[in-house]
Amino acid sequence: MGTSQRESDAAADHFLLKVARENPLQSLTEKELQLDETPVTIYPKPIRAKAWVRFGTIPVHMDCWIHRTTSEAAGVSFTILDKKFRCWVWGNAVTLPEPEPGAAPRAQATRSLRR
Image (cartoon, rainbow, N blue to C red):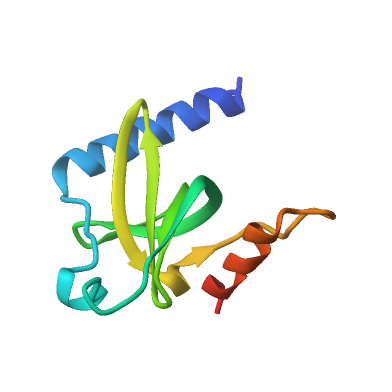
C-alpha cells in the first residue's frame, strides 16, 4: 500500500530538518551583499517564491518568502517543520511564480530577480 502525499511531504520535511541540523545554512557574506553601497528594497508583504539555498554543501530547492532584495540578491525565509530559516541568496537562485492576471505591481516589479 502506498503512502499519501501528506506522509511523503512529512518524511521529506523530517529529512530536510535533519540536513539543516547537521549542516549550517549558507548565506551571502557582507562583502558579497555590499549593503553599505547597494540600495535595499524591503517588502511590507513578503512575496512567495522558490529559491535554491544551501545547507553546508547540500543545495535544496525550497518554497520561500522574499522579504528584501538588492539588484543582485534576495533575502528569503522558509520554514521546515515549524523551524524558520532566513538567508540571503543570489537573485538568479530565486524563481517567482507566474503573475496572475491583475497581480499587484510589486509582484511584477520583482520579476527582475528571474534572470
